[in-house]
Image 1 (cartoon, rainbow, N blue to C red):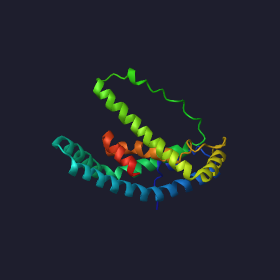
Image 2: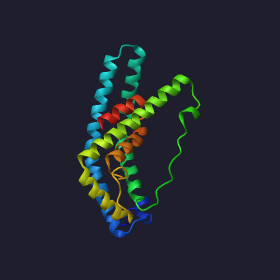
Image 3: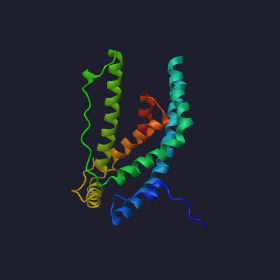
Image 4: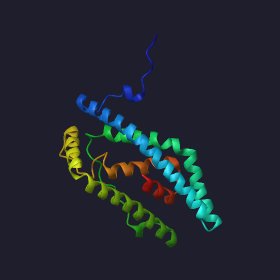
Length: 200
C-alpha cells in the first residue's frame, strides 16, 4: 500500500533545530486546543452582540448595517480558527528569523480622503489600537512573572535575548492582533471588528 502523500509543510525543510521544532509543535498543538474553545466562545458572544445591536437600532440603515455584519459572521465563522492557527504557525516557524523592519505608517494628513471619511478612519484605527493596548497592559499586569519567565524561554528557543511581554508571539497583544488579522476572513466592517475584539 503506497504511503499517503505528504503535505507541503511535511516536505518543506524545517527552519528550526530539532529541539526547537519539538517545542514549537507542542506549543502549536496546545494553542489549537485552547484557542478552539476561546474562538468559539468569542464568535457566539459576537453573534449575540451583533444581533442585539440590530434589534435596538433606531433606523433602517443602522439595522441593515448590523444585520449585514451578522450574516457575514454566520457565513464565514468556520474560516476564522483555521486562518488564526495557520498565521500562528507561520509566526512560530519564523521564531529565529530576524525581525522585520518597522512598517512606516503615513501621518493622517497624508491620507487622501474626504474630511468626514478621514475622521471616521482615524477614530476606528485609534480605537482598535487602543483596545489592543488596553488588553495587553491588563494581561501583562496580571501575569507579570509568568510572562517574564515565558519571555526567557522564548529567548532560548530563538537563540536571542529574552522576549518582552509585548514581543511574545503568544502574549495578549500578539494573540489579539492575530485574531484581528485572521478576522479578515469574516469580512466584517470596522465597527463589527471592534465588537469581536472586545468579545475576545
